[in-house]
Amino acid sequence: MKVPEHAEKFEELAMPLFDQLYNFARWLTQDTAEAEDLVQETYAKALRGFASFQVGTNFRAWMYRILRNSFLSSRTGLKVTVAIDGEADEALLPAESNTPESILIAQASREAVQQALADLPVPFREILLLCEVEEMSYQEIAETLAIPIGTVMSRLSRARKAMRDLLRKKNQGDRNGL
Image (tube, rainbow, N blue to C red; front, top):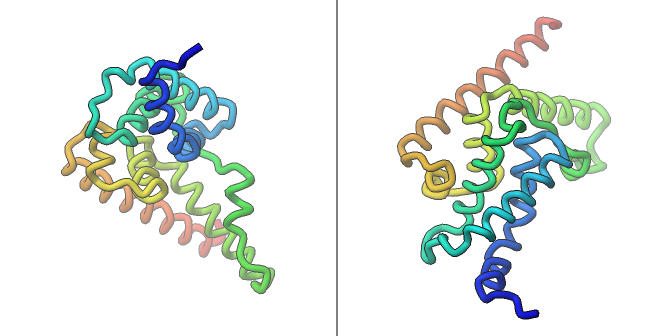
């Protein structure tokens, strides 16, 4: 049975994005099974709608938009917390030459950042993830979220400020023994 030509082109464009889309879905859903389902749904929707994709536009942003819209329309879109899987923790461990104290401090800092990110509202969290983790340009983020580039910049600025405020409060609470 011959595979339709558009399916081959879709596979060529979409498969290199699989890990990135899964990581983003994992951050959004905080659940491995839900992230897998979300990515599967994203690929199914994208393949069905691939004929409507305009060649010359940003395919990566198109795929992220489908994933995001699927997330927002699913029950997982109501959740506002995220978790990191064990593999990510292992990749972030300090070099063995560090002392136990420095390892503990680094882990506490990582956990504080993860908790602050989890405490952010979804619009702030997703824009930080797209910019800082997925390393998308402002233009790609604007296309993914279907918002003007000026909104990307202002939302990113507010998200970074909210993140700093959360980390500052956490740091002050730690110093005060809370």
